[in-house]
Image (cartoon, rainbow, N blue to C red):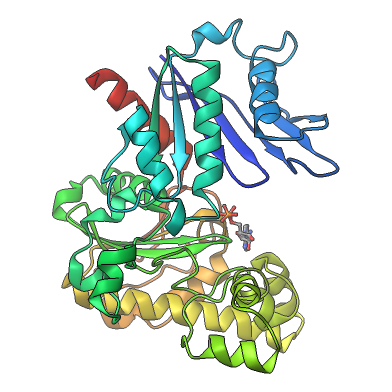
Length: 399
Ligand code: ADP
């Protein structure tokens, strides 16, 4: 069975084609800079190397058509005909409170995803557009929506409510939703499998540390608290996002810097985080290099980030009543021994001891804690597309 996974962003489309019998990746790639100069498709198909195709890609429709053309291309394509695709799985960022798990897409589902646009204006419209285009292209094919928020729907009221008038929750759905759920769910299962234990018996803290970063407390396989909130702006300081701040800072900046609310929102999303703190870059690789040669603000940004991660870990150990494993994943979590060391420094107090030698690892699923550590520390490679494909297959088999 072949499943196409589509992940539409505002100016990008990521895709993978997988053969699910063996979970073999047949092709993967992405379209970048949709509607801008320099738009292109990158694909790794039949060959080991990545092919770049520079084309004018004016919108998502053109992009999806180009992806389908490339999958059947005589030189680098991996299938003879589009008929070989059995099912399409779509990533949808926000499922609100309506979607507690992945669903087969129907007219009703489309309406409900649309109704979540008010709480996810940046993400859901483009996800929806991708789905509609694929439904037109493959009208008879079953398609599935997999939500970034669904895994967090098990978070209890006490953890998802903010200290705001309750009517705002009832009226507008203002509450913590949490994001990166597909990744947190994937690494939870992966680490349990690696530990040879059942997720139902474990307390796990998953640290998804990439450009966007969030932490999740997963107790007995269910997410019970997470650092991102109503939007992906809350929680940790990130590449360009501020993470949590005192809300009183917003009107203060508006007055002092003569900005509108929208402008401050963009400022907090795009100009803050480790970029704003360091004044240098949103990429931790740049900060680590600069810090090594004595850049004080680069070091400060790293320290602030590591401190915040540690703080979340500490609080989740308490809310879960202990922890069996802490998992590091995504770009930074998988690839930066230095950052993992900074974060784990001091975690001995909760019984977690990092093995400095084993920690010298990048891009691997491996245990990095010492043998005398009571809490297992792991790096796990996340694979959101595979998780989407698995969910898509599961629903295909049920229906
Ligand atoms: P996204 O959230 O965009 O999917 P990724 O999960 O790909 O992000 O993570 C990208 C980030 O991971 C980069 O911005 C960089 O900060 C960090 N990163 C990737 N590789 C390394 C590395 N070797 N050392 C330190 N940081 C890294």
